[in-house]
Length: 82
Image (tube, rainbow, N blue to C red; front, side, top):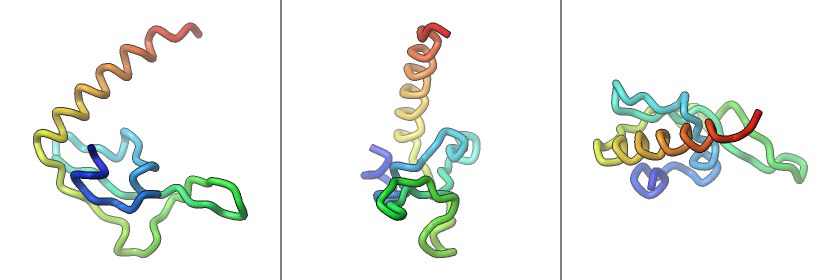
């Protein structure tokens, strides 16, 4: 849903993490991407160009969906034995 709504590059979309989501501001920061480097997938802490470092406005319905997803994710993580 995030990728369809905001249109980031595929490597950027895959690399999104929760710290990039700002529910108060209503935005998602693009700060990194997943790339193939020397035949291996690597998380690269920068984007293709300086213009790639950006904040994307997050529509309310997307924020609601992400909040629900995060709640379910945290509930599932709490059930994992440590």
